[in-house]
Image (cartoon, rainbow, N blue to C red):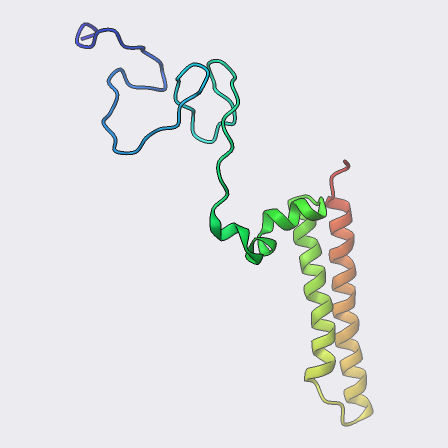
Length: 137
């Protein structure tokens, strides 16, 4: 069976016969080997992969809303950023409680203040969790 295909490189990650494909695979400029999926360097010679152009959709203002862009911009870990966003949400809930609920009596006022304290405590807990989850740089 090994005599069926001659002059081919037998690697464990590549079949001995190259499949026909309509798309062009990116190859290394140094040695001509195909890059592995997601590789930044060639696995044979170590030559760096050429930088891919940024898609047009990421040039607009919407890239500022991406999780990875915010994470890199603030220098936070994933868990720390999630805790930070939860804390921001809790602070927005504090403001919304005062706007949504109307206060007719003193008991209503106390209830609204009680809800605000709960949301503020949740925000403090989220921010503390974010500080504890932040990785030292």
